Length: 336
Ligand SMILES: [Zn+2]
Image (tube, rainbow, N blue to C red; front, side, top):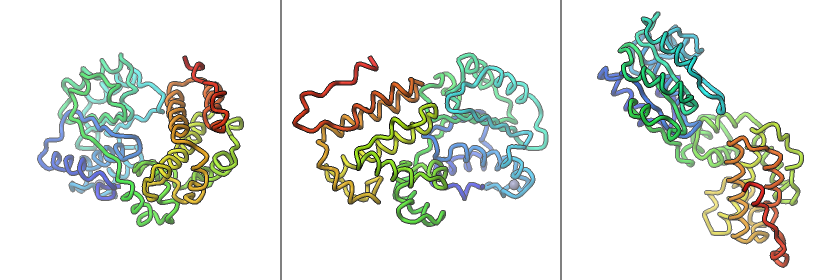
């Protein structure tokens, strides 16, 4: 992929191209922005641009160097991927320190990309700081993070920061229809469910997400049947996806109730059902449900016991009929 193929990140790309043009691309960079919007793609494409055999501002994506970088096989381009919950340990930074002091094998510039840099341990951060103080001129370090608040401030201060933003949802919907040939319903759902994050939408587009979300809506939200008991609780990704689908559904009911234009609905394909079920909930109920879902998603990130989390959540999702409201028990104590 070359720069011109990357959608929606024109501004950071333009800045980087200016740096390349004036040979000012040196030292360390920090790419900041939500997950799934193209930060790593831009970092890898930048590595290609710096090493492309055709020496164009936009890499050719065809030469041996570009192809090696694409396949993560270029000896001068090192890309560290970790799972979201993994930490980046000192051993990796020690290796980086050795590699960065070697001459480039074949390329012009050595590039070190550290994705999810907020996962650096304190020890690794301190070791990296020393490298960032005086990085060799033939090297470039790119840190990528969706959670820069977790990075050492001293690390941030030694990097040039570039901000990345998600696309406007209408724009992403258009791209999904035009460039990826999606029908109207999936294009709209993915653009809004993924909040404008192209990478996330592309990951989901070949899955059963639409069928799955409609199954959940049919089973739970319409028939008032909860699948929470049957969720494979050991798979946190499934639980997260289920909670996000439910949150989108209840957010839509809230939007319909307060009169937000239908085009803003995530589940626009289920507009008729949304209009039908909205009288079942008071705004207060919806606020409580959305709060519970959002808290549960936060707890999920903190590795709380999933069984406990879901059993608590079950209480919150189906409001009692209005006449029984005074009998309602609060499930909050479980987290206190
Ligand atoms: Zn090339």
